[in-house]
Amino acid sequence: MRLKDYDNDDGKRVWLSDDELTRLIEQAETPHQRLAFLLAGRVGLRRSEIIEVCPQDLVDGPTGNHIRVWESYAKRDKYREPPVPKEVVTIAETLAYQQDDDEPLLDVAGSTIYRWVRRAADALEDETGDEGLEYLDVHDLRRTWGTYLLEQGVIPSVVMDWGGWEDWETFRQHYLGEFSPEAIRRERGKVEFLEHDDGGSDVVHPGTIPANGSERTAD
Image 1 (spheres, rainbow, N blue to C red):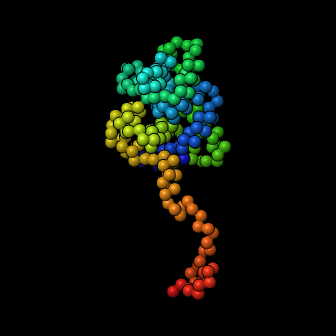
Image 2 (image 1 turned 60 degrees about the vertical axis):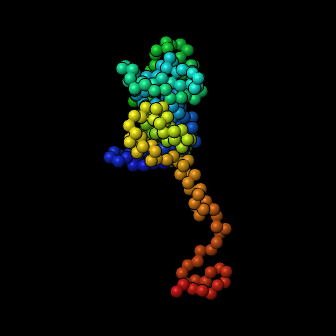
Image 3 (image 1 turned 30 degrees about the vertical axis):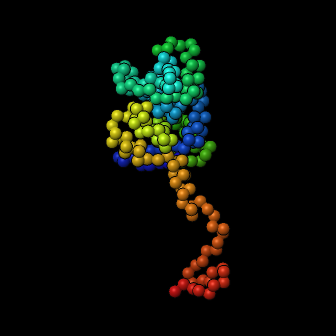
C-alpha cells in the first residue's frame, strides 16, 4: 500500500498493491458487492457509474469483453468502453438472469457502494493490522486501476480513453507522476544495501578497534 496526502483536503490518497486489491475483493459478502469492487478496481468505474451499469452495457466484440459507460447515463454523453475481466461478465450474467436488460445490476445508492468498500477495508485491516486501510475510499480503487495499467505498459492515451479522462494535464499530474506499491518494491530492489545482508559485519564505533584486529583508531 502507498499513501499520499491530498493537496487541500484531509485524508490520504491510497494505492493498493495488486495482492491487496485482490484481498479486498475477497472481503465481498455477496455477488453484488463483489461486482461493485471489480467494477471499481478492475474496470476503473466511478461510484456514480457503478450503480448505473445494466446487463445490456456488457458487450463482446473483436477486442474482447467491454462495458459501455456514459458519465451521465441520462444524457448518454461522454461515452467510453473500458475492457472487463471475464469474472465481471460471469457475475453480471448471473445477477441479470431474472431482470430486464435495461435495469441496473446494482439497485443501490452510491453511498451504499461506499459503505461496502469501507466495511471490506475495515475487515481487511482487522486481518492485516494495516491502519492505512482506514483511508481507503471507492475512488482509490479506480486510482489503483489507472496506475496499474500504466505500469503494465498500456499507453497513456489508451488509459485516458478507458478511464474517461479528458484533460491531459490533470491526468499527467495525478497518474503519470504517481506509482504503485509494486513500483516502489521494484525500485527498492535496485538499491543494494536495502536488499542484501552484509553478512552480519560488526558495527565499529569511533575510537574502538575493529573486529579484524586493526589497531587504527578514529582521529
